[in-house]
Image (cartoon, rainbow, N blue to C red; front, side, top):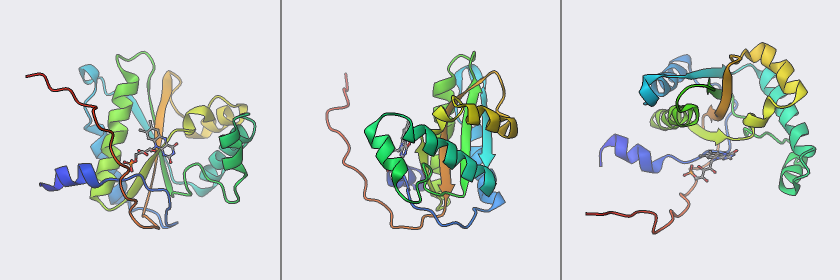
Length: 186
Ligand SMILES: Cc1cc2nc3c(=O)[nH]c(=O)nc-3n(C[C@H](O)[C@H](O)[C@H](O)COP(=O)(O)O)c2cc1C
């Protein structure tokens, strides 16, 4: 199996990170991989907001904690109550992917870019995981305030975000993949 194919099946979502920051060169490689994702009619409607500032990461953590605590959803409330809670597992780098709302396929394009980020990170021995909760960040008053710093373009919607950093734990075993998800018609 070639390296690329191997990386496709061995990438795992990582949920424990070293505080040490990834290098600028590694970050650039990850970003470039996202920029070369396919996009509908090559619109490339995305914007990648890389957050490595500890204070801002702490603020994002705080706002999401509040959102979880006030969500009325038991599992979220319980998670947010855990000491040292971090929805992005204290990863040192967070990349928020937004895309022009009125583009042809903002969700698909943004998700493909994130997928490329994760694969590129894995090829560089950098851990990563999709962080879904960032999408609710900008619905809150505090999140809107924070956006003055993050500067996500006004005509964009948030597609998703990824946490990136060096893995502090072991590589998780892949969850079994579902069967009967393929139909081949010859
Ligand atoms: C759209 C999407 C949202 C996800 N959100 C989260 C999340 O918020 N937190 C998390 O720890 N993992 C999240 N994940 C990671 C999945 O849990 C993970 O991909 C899945 O369990 C399979 O594991 P693997 O990535 O190691 O193969 C998300 C994945 C996707 C595609």
